[in-house]
Image (cartoon, rainbow, N blue to C red; front, side, top):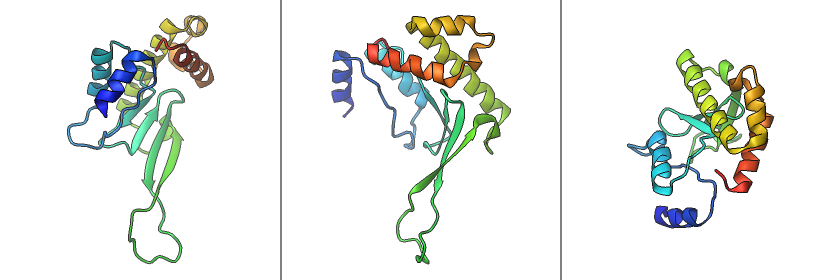
Length: 156
């Protein structure tokens, strides 16, 4: 459970996943804050969940919108006896059917915070970040490679 994870996380740097966001009272930002205060770490959010549950998220590295929708009814089955596996739909964020100016602004701000945090932890990425005309537009490949280095080094 949660206590076991906290004990293990205090001993060694490791990625953490926030789940159960579909429960009443769940808050992504509160969970990030809890990781920071309980473990004394600076969590790097790679996704931004949208709405209740986690059917829709923004991938902050790729700046893509992801949505899990109910899958089609299997051939030969006239009624549904159990839930169909969800199907993943993916768009560039600005092209997602649920993209709003507010969502674009929120996601852009979160990605900028992510790139700033990674630049503080990775010298190679910091050079690219400081040399970029528009830091929010740093290509996903550079950010992904820096996140990998930071994760493997245990500095995040």
